[in-house]
Structure formats: C-alpha cells, structure tokens
Amino acid sequence: MTRIAARLNRIKPSPSSMAGQRARELRAQGRDIVGLTAGEPDFDTPPNVCEAAARAMASSRTKYTDVGGTPELKEAIAGKFRRDNGLAYRPQEIVAGTGGKQIVFNALMCTVEAGDEVIVPTPYWVSYPDIVLLADGKPVFVDCPPGNGFKLRPEDLEAAITPRTKWLVLNAPNNPSGATYTLEELQGLAKVLLRHPHVWVLTDDIYEHVLYDGRRFATIAQAEPALKERTLTVNGVSKSYAMTGWRLGYGAGPAELIKAMVKLQSQSTSNPSSITQAATVEALTGPQGFMEERKRIFQQRRDFMVEALNRLPGIECHAPEGAFYLFPSCRQLIGRRTPAGQALRSDEDFVLHLLDAHNLAVLQGGAYGVSPFFRISFAASQAKLEEGLARLRSACLALAEA
Ligand code: PLP
Image (tube, rainbow, N blue to C red; front, top):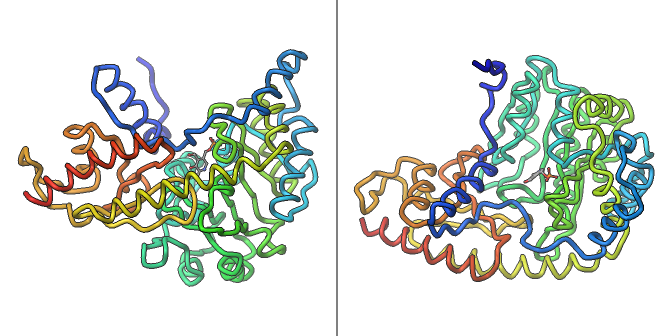
C-alpha cells in the first residue's frame, strides 16, 4: 500500500480547484450546473500574446531556459515594475515560476522554519495557510471584519507580531473580499513593520489590474521604500492577461531570497515553459490598453450583481473594490430549514444546498477563513450570472419562507 507522508495530513486540497472539478463531474452526469467558482477571467488571452507563443514554437524556443526565467523575461518584468509601480529591480532580484502560486510556495519553503509564524489576514486566499503548514510554519490569522472593509488595521498587525513572526502576507485586491489598500493605508501598516525589522512582507499583487471606481493600485514596497529590502512582491499574468492556463508568475525581492528560490525551483519544476515565457514578454511589453475595457466590463457586472444580491432575502453584499469576486454574508439564512427539512448550520451547508437542490456552484466562506459568507465569481458571462442569480433567488426565497 502507498504510504503518504504525514505532512500531507496537515493540508486539504484547494477548495476552489476541487469545486471546479466537482462541477465538471456533475455536468458529466447530466446535471445542468451553473458554476460561479472559477478564479479566472472569462476573456481570451490577447491575440498578440498567442502569436508570440506561436513564434516561439516556430523558432524552436522550446528548450530549457535559465531556471528562474530568460534574460528577456526578467527584463520585461523589471520594465513592468518600473512602469506600473515605480520600483527598480535588477535581474538577480527577479524570479519567474510556474504561476504566482509556485512563487508563494517557493518563498515560504525557502524561509519558514518549524514553528515560525506567518501572519495571514482573514479572509485569505485558500492556499496561504496550507503552504505555511507544509513549510512547518504556523499561520497566525488576523481577523479583518467587514466593518473594517476586510482590511488589516495597523493596531491589529502590531498585536499579532511576536519574536517568531517571519512574514506578513498581504493580498490586495483581495481574493475573496476585493479589499484594496490606498497608499496611505499601506504607509500605516509600514509604520508598524518599520518597528519590527525581523518581519518580512510577501505581497501578492496578482489582481493589480482588476480595480474599480477609478482606484489606483499601490503596493507596499512603493508605499515605504525602506521595506523593499525585506519585501517579496508576487505577481503574474494569470488574472491581468487572462493567462491562467499558461502558468507564469513572478516574484521580485532581495537577491539572497531570489537565489534560494531559484535553487529550490532547480530541484522541482525547473524553468517555467519556454513558450509561456516568450508569450509573457509580449504580454508585459505589448499594448496594455485592452485592460481598461475589461475592467469596465467587470465593473458593470459587479454593479449589477451587488444590487441584485442585496435585494435577495437573507443576503448582504458589499461592493468589492477590486478582483472579480463577490463575498456576501448569508448569516440571516443560517438556522433556516430547506424545503426538504434540513437545517442549515453553516455556510458550507448553504453552499451544498445550493449545489444539490439548485444546481448552483459557489464556494463557502469557511474556505477563506470567515463564516457565514460565500464567494461568487463574476468572471462569467452576463447570461450565466443572471441564471446563477435566478437560482440563488429561488433558494433564498424558499429558505426565507420556511
Ligand atoms: N494569488 C491569489 C490571491 C489568487 O487568487 C491566485 C489564483 O486564484 C493565485 C495567487 C495563483 O495564481 P497563478 O495562476 O499565477 O498561480
């Protein structure tokens, strides 16, 4: 019998990946499932990016490359940081890997020792705590309630820091809440961090370009340049360029950390796909104008959904400032009985009920560390959103009447 290592018992499969898989399985069984779980834009990769990939293949750029990325890709990434964030990085301060997820994984694996603490503001992207656990670390959750706009406050950060704190993980626009930080809010957090030089910052900026209401993106190394020497800025092309399947993420930070990450990568995945790297050079250096149009479409869907959700009995939904998720509360429905007589004890029960009785797939807030909430992705067509909404409406009406 295969004996699986005990460390695997510390983690669970990614709930968002599993939900997608479950929806596909149910569809294969003939069920008409509306899936609003996907964390990926429903747009196509821009044609100029696909053409760059085709050129790479046709010109035999299909071989191994430097483990941490080609010189051209690092130059493109450095150019992106200069253009979008006013940050200067040298090639040895940049690493490209197989998605933003791998960059987070490698950074934590390279630095976290048994018992080290990693501060994870809640709600969080599902993978942070599990990666910390795989690295033998201890996730320290800091509650960021809706009343604080789901944002980390300086006083809560201060209270969470101990001598064992290794990292603070920041993620804005946030998955799942959509919370973003202004430059001034980041400066407030930076003030605390300046008092604790042993704490490093991993900022996951993967939704940088998905921001609403004319908000401007800010990142911590820009808000406080003195933190740059202990910040790893993570980004990638998955969300901004609709390239989730291409698998390219990157990190920029101190050369010593980057060197360790490349070393780890050299014994695991090696370089990200050479073809994807060529495509990413085009994505980062080619025309950027299409993003404004995509942002406009996302914002229209957000406005439509927030308004409609707030009209449903038992649902309360704030308007996310960025990313493409809604994170409504279903608090008023907890304790209610389904028409089949089952009492809903949690957001997980609610989400399972939506899937079983209404063929609607969404994700429970518990997967993101807060209950009773649920996450709806609006990276879906208007028709699909309307159908999802109709199913949610009939579920909520039936529960509210019960
Ligand atoms: N970080 C956050 C906050 C995400 O939501 C995701 C994907 O859902 C990732 C990182 C992973 O992105 P990638 O496709 O680059 O691995």
